[in-house]
Amino acid sequence: MSHTLLINITGPESRGLIAAVTQAVAGHELSMEKLDQSVYHDTLLFSAQLSVPAQETAASVVEKLCALCDEHQLTCSSEISVAGSELTKYAVTLLSQEVTEEQVVRVNQVLAEHGAIITGAKDLTNDGALNPENAKKRISSCLEFQAKAISLDTDQLKKALLEASTELTMDVVVQQESVYRRHRRLAVFDMDSTLIKAEVIDLLADEAGIGHKVAEITERAMRGELDFNESFRERLAMLKGLDESVLAGIADNLIIMDGAERLISSLNKLGYTTAILSGGFTYFAEYLQNRLGIDHIYANELEIVDGKVTGVAKGTIVNAERKAELLNQLTKDEGIELDQTIAIGDGANDLLMLAEAGLGVAFHAKPLVRQKANYSVSTLGLDSALYLLGLSEKEIRALHG
Image (tube, rainbow, N blue to C red; front, side, top):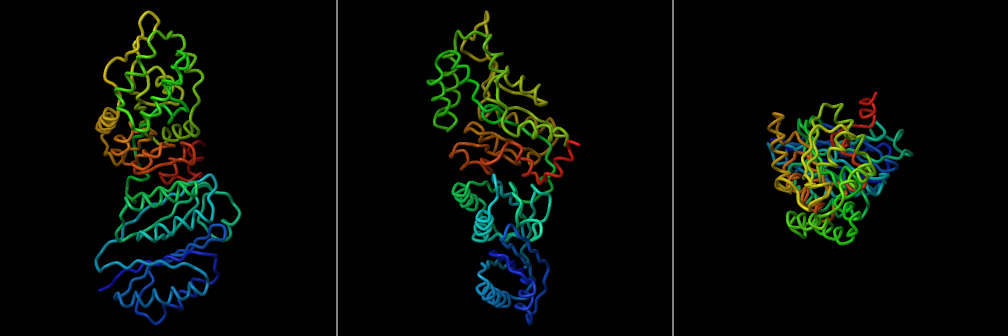
């Protein structure tokens, strides 16, 4: 009855390692199913998948490999399956302004501690597999690792990776491999502080001379400390009497989030349906729809009478529950599964939407939102979501001719 033994070796680059491993396991009744050796800068990532007849054989092999690694100042981790169990595949995406050796080693260590073994790696920024010839000098912002695990507590792994990410200024996203990871069909976005670098209600408050007071309430609401509906009505009421003419000026000066234009244009070329689901205002959502080429918008409509803001909004407030409802409705309208959706937002009122989506990303979010969301990105621009779909820079460039 065969077992699967996963071996992961990390440390300073070591020439001839494959030969040394082969020699170390010689004499045992086993078969070598897969070997992979990657190098980033001077850091070695070596993995092997072996089929062994019994756990005793696996233990003996691991003992020899650990001794070999001690000789070469390498770290060895292993995982043994029970007979008949299936390995689950994962895609692990490491994002950073500049990926470092320390980050690569830490990700590998955390994965190993939680029972996941890296089986391959590629550089999505520089379009290639990692090897000594092409990975020593170049600067990367995204590495993608392929990993396998027999069993994986994703909640505990996420917690450990979030701690490491905070310490080393990186993002690590772990997704279970599926047919949908590279083939999603619908992407929905929060607007304020996600597609644009501002909270529009704060900009309106600045024009009304009450900016500091409103911004403080907005900050607490986005951290999840206040009821969204109540805080929204409170802030909006303070804008009563604001002249309608200021809206156009604010719209014309909105700063688009880094990477937003490249992300939306790439998704459009890939045939995605896109939508804004915003607790902000339709006036500004329509402006972004036209500028970025977004298919649908759902936001709050400011009531304006005689050229003045009345301090109330028409219709149902687009809050956390409403965003999740809209995502589900759009999914049904498109005839797709929730696993085929992407949602990106930054605030506590986005968490339900992020939880519903197949890929829900907290973008440059507050600590509470990062902790609760399944995935988060805080180091790169909005277009880094394309890496999470498994796209390389070469593939992204090809989309734009």
